[in-house]
Image 1 (tube, chains in turn yellow, orange):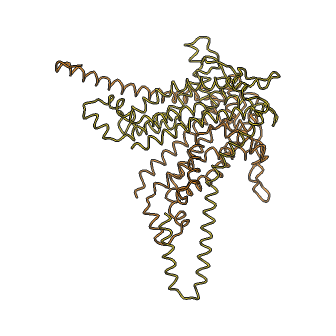
Image 2: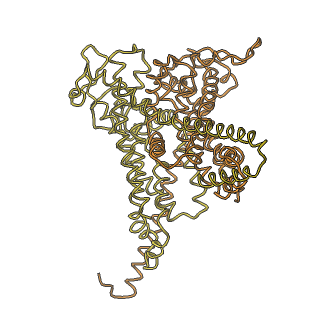
Image 3: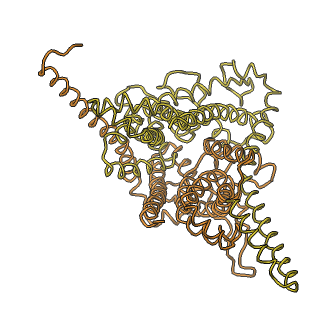
Length: 323
Length: 307
């Protein structure tokens, strides 16, 4: 772009050289003001683009500065190893493992639902379905991912939990299992659409080669296309994981807000996100240790998702380079 | 494995073809699970909340009696917050997109901005809530107001708007820009006269998808400490006396639809849960309508534009 802009500039000045001296000053002034206007506009657009950088800096600054104060009260060792999370009691304990267990168990349940279903749907849409079916189903899946999570939370609490209670007697009204299952269904479209994009990016001649050897569709899909799109599919899984880890409302509504160090999905437990919601709903004075806990919890959450995002970014980059 | 006869080879082929069919059916089954869950959710909410979907439901304030409670303050709050969100996110997002596509030179600053945007898209929404709580609520002193919520959601959907803008701009062929530059147009003239009009449809699609996401976001708004029980409306933006417009509503406390649903869902009384179902149905309907509109727009653009 800059090349064509520069060449139009030189063309301009050549025309001006032929002009009379009287109007040259006026033309120069007009050209200067035009240039100034262009510069101002460019600066404004640049500042707008910087807003997103400032957002990230703001997030990091807020999370770190509040957490630093928090870690002055609570040693990092206790934060990582304590097995109780009772920040609002007199006998305060700050063991993040308690909240982390809720986050990990619910995410694991969600992934057990989303990864198999999402992968099968992606393989089916990419390798088996005709273009018409694909073009109708994809927008419908997209719609599914647009449903507000609070509504999924209501669905988990009011529909899925009573349904599960018929199969698992004694299942409490709040539990990680139903929240996790609904969360899994919610992230199916994320997983399936990215995995499908990765599979469709596999060059046709790989498939043709496989068919020419007499392979069936399923054999081609599983032994040629899936391995070729492997890193893209992994990136889809990782995006699913980071969505599951950061999901809030389904868990706040359907999994209860009681901190509980457990690896059993049929129990109620608070996740990192649900804890933040719980504190925000109450009236904690600004600057208290209780108030700072949510920033420490948020920092933990941010580090986990950042880790997965970087991994996903790296994988996507690798897979892009291949073709 | 050595194959002895043609019959065995035929059996092998038949077996593999059968697997093909089985997998195809399995795929349809998985797809059906996903889509049926969605249908169940929609129908379940409609059944639970049907009795509450009356005109009064839209014109009543929340109440301690479930039968009289309505979503007036919630939907008015949602409209106001969405207005702020759009007013902030659309200009910022479109400007960023234009800068990155038309102006930015390939250097490390541009790289930082690009990586940063793709990273922001993966930040959990509740973290934006924490940012808003620390920054907007306390450091800027905006309090738990419509302005804080609108700004928070604007930052949240900014990556969506930027990515959509960039994709729409990238679809415009270089020949159009070259033609304009050849006639002596400046960069901004090219953007204003060609890039923006041609990418408008794609940008709109992105904006609608972003707004549909913002309308259903609950976690960041709860985190900034929005009240859950609001039985009044923010001051009206238009007044009867001079200067006719007032910006007092920006600093007013508020509630929005998802928070109202959360509040009703967390009450043990089933009568309130019927309210939650009704409000949830309306919210799902709104997001579906918005997403549907966006998908339709994208389809139309794809069909109409032939460069």
